[in-house]
Image (cartoon, rainbow, N blue to C red; front, side, top):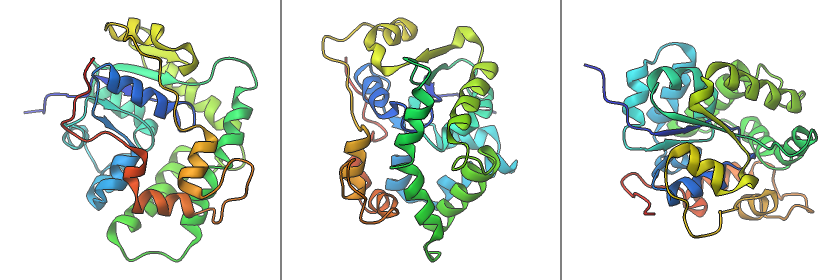
Length: 256
């Protein structure tokens, strides 16, 4: 018998598009805990990240994913965002949110600029350093290399960064039915989000967290105007001190 789907909200925006702010908003609206890369880094379970790799390679099932996500009411960030087709099949009754920056035609350029001083250099150096015998780090390296950079982004995330976010957003819009998908910019605040989810608007400001400068200061030891001590320092810090990012814990439901 198939497992009963649990997640209610699945967010499909790539990293550095406002996903951390949206995660905090979902917690406030009662849709926590949220599955996120930081959760994986905290758990340090090689089976967890390997399940995502296996899904991309065709050796994991939808029930494997349902089992993995059974304790979460929302899903966000890498690795989940590149498996939106499988997630839609696993959770056809969920509500999906594509968080992206919609203000101007220059937004892909802004996303590229943010990625190139945060996630991309961190991942690059993590992959270039001497392989770690730790099973979790080995599986994490495999996922970054084979799944994220290889299969999904086709080796183009570093060279054609802007094209990749445009292509990702288009694929999501083409895959998820319009009545189940909210294309959303966090600068729009609460209104579109609460209307889509059918919940009351909270009487507090919309959260805005983890901008580029904050990411660098927290994980790379510098602010936006400075070169990080090590391009791989962010990954190391995330693995060693994932709680610095204050992600959700399974079983902790946010209250309205």
